[in-house]
Length: 174
Image 1: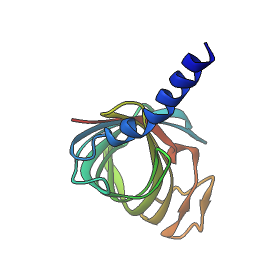
Image 2: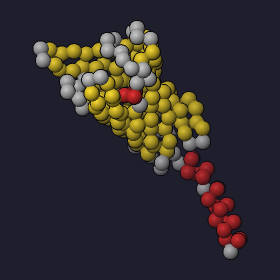
Image 3: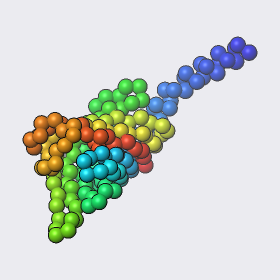
Image 4: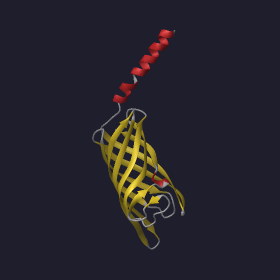
């Protein structure tokens, strides 16, 4: 009995590395994230589908569109390049360079803003093609005049640590 338990434990330990080696590192990327915003205008959700391509285990390029659920919602169009710079166990830490163009229709015309900068995140694989992803913070330039809450340095360049910058989701590589 003890021999069988030890054998099963050894096989379980040895099977961890082959699972890590099976994680897909190249292919088309589909990602969906959700974030929550709590502003003085109310609470709302931001849903962001993403398409892209993972060129190797370090570089991903793509395009995302964010949809807000509030009254007079912005739609955010975002081309991005992501660099996976550190792997700790199965966690991959990344930095993402992005340029956001936000637009919305309001009575009497359109309004919008643009911003460019970096966001930080991590992924964790749950199987060969699927990872859980998370992003938080924004460091960069923004033309958005409504810098509120946890926006450090209210000028055009700063660090945004508001809750709406926390995106959680699923990433699939085909």
